[in-house]
Amino acid sequence: MTRPGATWRNWARSAAVRPQRMEFPRTVGAVARAVTAARARGMPIKAVGAGHSFTGIAVAPGALLDLTDLSGVVSVDAERARVTFLAGTRLHQIPKLLAPYGLAMANLGDIDRQSISGAISTGTHGTGVRFGGLSTQVVGVALVAGDGEMLRVNEHENADMLPAVALGLGALGILVEVTLQCVPAFLLSAVEKPEPLDEVRASLHQRAAEADHFEFYWFPHTDSAMTKTNTRLPESAPRKPLGVIGGWVDDTLVGGALHQAACGIAKAVPASVPAIAQASVRVWGDRAFTDASHKVFATSRSVRFREMEYALPASAVGAAFDRLRGLIDDEGWRVSFPVEVRFAAADDRWLSTAYDRDTAYIAVHRYWREDPSEYFEAVEQIMRAHDGRPHWGKMHTLGVADLAPRYPRFADFVALRDRLDPDRLFGNRYLTRVLGE
Image 1 (cartoon, rainbow, N blue to C red):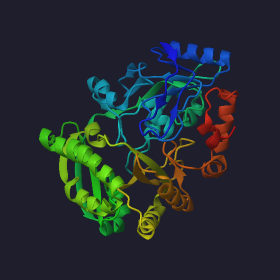
Image 2 (tube, rainbow, N blue to C red):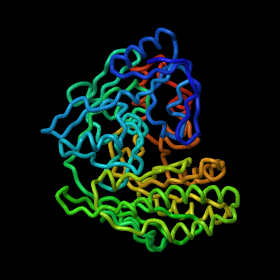
Image 3 (cartoon, rainbow, N blue to C red):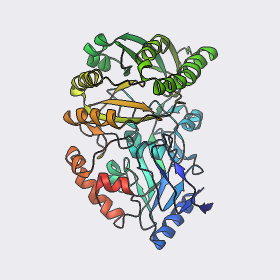
């Protein structure tokens, strides 16, 4: 289906565009035809998923392909636990699709609203020192290249391209299929609780090393850390899920409605932020439960926000966090959203923020109705000083001159882009900024 362009906005309302035309392909063939038509018109074309990137990476001023209807399972290799999905499949749909085969994704982030193609293309990740980002689960893709032809990349075809196309920023073509290496379905035993921040900071690397998945949130203006520790268990282990009422209170009432109200109050009365933060620590996140992995990894995010996240060498995360903590105090800023710290294993994806180094992530957020510029720019200076790499789908100010030295395979990626999209059919302003003309 095709219609004249209406205004498209991302979830965070930090990017918007009125494309010349919008298309809603239901088949791989329809995507190929759309690319061929766009090329004939000299019109740039880009695919969008759920719009959960905070940057302009998905902004499509020419032809916009909404892949919502390109969804579902293409094929299953049960023996090798490999499943191929159409590119528009949302992460939250995947557990149900995998359930008949007793499979799960090996790791997830804390939001599952994204499409699988968007999530891998921007470097979405979860936490856990032995687990890579979502792109490391990719063992094959099919994409429509700039000439309208299908390009398959897997262990048998064009295998040398996989580290590039599995995290390709949407710059190499339109992904239409993604093949994931899955694992047997498993449970997670979750312990979430407030702890003294200084104790968590002192034992941070030990905690991360000893847990399957560890992260913490720090509410500025408090001395507490909200820790999350998840332990992997076989699917046959006893389940102790959150009760219906308890889960609703924690996630919908406290994490949604009350947090929304608190953000509104904080924006109107910034002096109230420290008291709100102290109250949040008292009511948020003191619980233990065991459930299917996807139900523990991902949580609801009903309050809109804007986010910047930097990947640091794991050894630098403590020093960077300390400087960030001091910055907020020194500037007297009133920050109503928590700072998040997570971990990931080194990987081989050329543009992965964890390429060739064990990594820790520090993420900062602001309520979407507040201007994040001053806060984010100051934090960014700290992260850059610690050899940080910005998340491709989250807000940052770096350009190609800053980014190229941070990625050993950057030139190789750009060279592959020149081969697959020499006319920049899939380009936009964001990609020009981060990859060059």
